[in-house]
Image 1: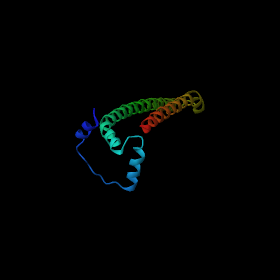
Image 2: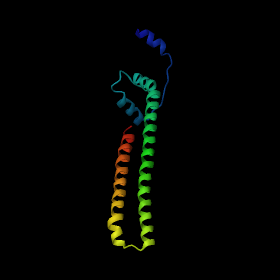
Image 3: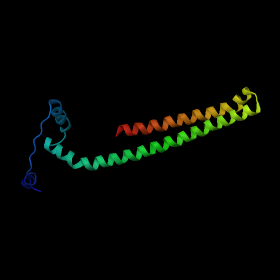
Image 4: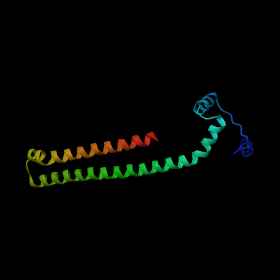
Length: 133
């Protein structure tokens, strides 16, 4: 396409007012484009597709995060219910507390701690990925 054809297609002129800071940002960000106009045109042409793509990716990641949170809380709740069942059973049967703690509670508490660690690890990774976008 000839240069004259491009100029005919670009007959609209817009003027904008920028603060000094905004102008410096425009200069800095457009330094790799052939001109500020070219940079702004690229922004306009790519903005919709890129924004939609980023929003869809973020929504998928957020959905995955909530699913992961739900699963982790379910596992934690299950462990808490197991501890409560054992405590209630022990209370009704007057079984010695020390033996119960050593044999029943410590493994359940360890499992609960492991679930919480997994929860924190998986959600912090996902949060970091979302934050980078």
